[in-house]
Amino acid sequence: MSLSRSFTHLTDKSALKTDPYHVYYVNSTTVYLLQPPKSHPSSRSRPWIITRKLMKNQSAFILYHPLTSKPYSFNFHPYNLHFSQLNPTPLAVFYAFKSHYPVDKLLVLHNYALFALYGGGQLQGCPRFNSDSSSWVELSSRNVNFDDVISFEDKVYVVDRQGITKLVNYYKTIRKISIGKTVVSHPLISGSGRFGWRKRFAIDGETLYLVVRMAEKLFDVFRLKSRGKGFYWDRVDQFKGNKVLFMARDCYFFLRASRKFPGREYRNCIVFSEAAFPQYGNDCWEFTESDNVRRNEVDIAVFRLDDERFVREGEGENSGFPKIDWSPPDWIFNVSVFSADEFQKHSVSESSSSQSEREPDEDERLDSATTKFEGLDIRSDLVPTLQKIWRNHGNIINDSIVRNGDIVARALESLATIVQILEDNPVQSLSDSQADYLSFTLSDLRNICFKVYWLVSFVEKALKVHKSKPLVESLNNLSQLSSQVKERRAILLGELANLDEEENKLKEEMTKVSEMIPFFGEVKFDEAIGAGLTGVC
Image (cartoon, rainbow, N blue to C red; front, side, top):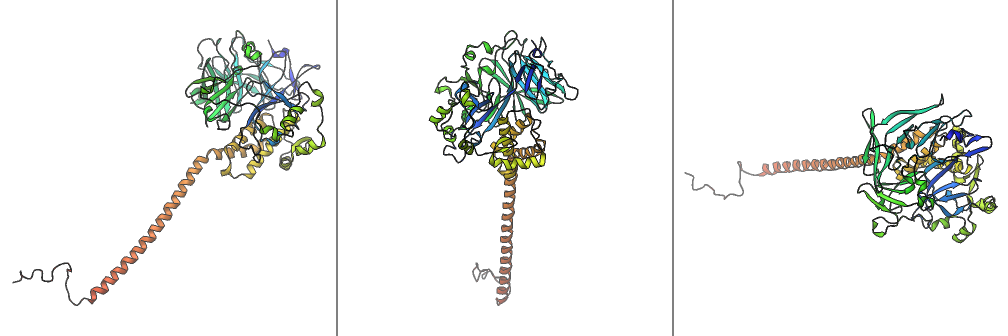
């Protein structure tokens, strides 16, 4: 089986084709965290996490459950639900395209390399997918199947069924791609690797994790650590920052386990769908044979790292985990153009193409509060920032691998938001959520090849300073204590000087009084006047 038989190269950075009559489009799908506006009465309500995929005509989009990929019972037209009003935070972006063989994962690397994991462990790479002379290179072999591929710190890593981890060499100039040196040679799984579950990479900030399902109800999580000139997988029992890892078949994302969502009980947990870790078959993964997956009723389960507790969703209130509410919150209808009833009435289905094609009327355009910029509908309050960026750095979207106008528009709004955060906030006022937004959004912008090299140093500096805030706060506290000590010392020195002055005055008074006494010699006032009289001869 070879992908080269199904397609040969990407053209116009957005379409794979086998011949002039068969074009395969690369779709970019995003997982968002949506929250009500701060001014909304429900501003403290729970957020909503959804997967958003644009339809082919790009005039409407479908919302999916982020873990099961099951579509919600309604679809939205962009002017029915204003994402710009919902504080959208991108949590994950993943890519897919259709070919004769299902592709399990598509990794787009900057503006040239493409990696496709398919067939339950086969891996191919395309070193220059935006070139007409590109071709696919087989990277796996008959004896080696790969479980995952990921880009981390400008390097591409692959892991096989035994947990052996390698680098992928890619050379942009000579259009060559190949499996490189072994990073971790020690197997995590004993045996041949023919039995078990797919292993998954996950990145959180500067940490690369590897999630390994050791048994049906047991997981091990490792982080890549350096040792001398080499690396090894170090087992961990918690995630940094009390976070929870969500894993779906197509993507993953981290969130802080807060009271609002999904609950503080989910700290250091993996919340996953069964499709995220398919079992090995003879030659491929067997998730397509699962009855639950086939019926689109994928199970969701929870595994906590520190106490190795495993719970399936819906196993009762005594499980120790509050039920995660994935349904649309009530406030979503109030922020939208339509009310809840109108929302259902005007919802767009895949089959109702006539409504999907309908253009918004003038009132809807006014309600959207957008302005045309580079032919895209952008939030009006963000356009001045983008205009400044264009003046200083030119057109930054020329080399973007995303050609969908709505996605590009949302990405530009995220870019403008980053700039405003950096310009409007002093270092000490940068919040954790803002720091996460800076990190994730910059990574997404670089992955879709926006020209944001000029922004990198500012974001990195802000993140480093933010990361050092506890130390800076400790230093400030020590500085304040030092100032208090100095102030107290000054007060004490002043009081001591006053005491010295009082002592000198007393000595002067004593001298004056002594001079007025009309006899000589020492007089002891506490003794009898005739003391020692009878002893005088």
